[in-house]
Image (cartoon, rainbow, N blue to C red):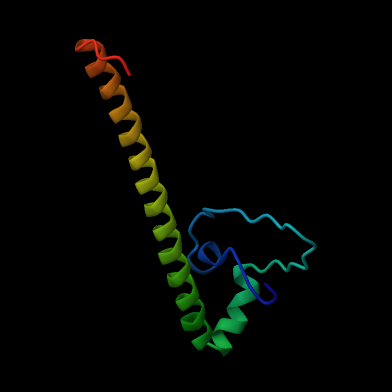
Length: 97
């Protein structure tokens, strides 16, 4: 959305970038590097606090999405395993489906 940002983890912590962004519509985007941000952070150190709130929220949301995907994946594997076991049991006892 307008005014939103991405790439903050790498910019603010120096960590390697861990995600990409793809625009679905036309976007005006500005690139900011550490040297470009240092002056602003020096003048407004409270900005780091505000951005860290957004970063923490985004990490929590990403973690929740990953956990749901892991849970869905586990459920799918369990279901597939159950069907394979059922097939083996039916074969062993000569049960017609």
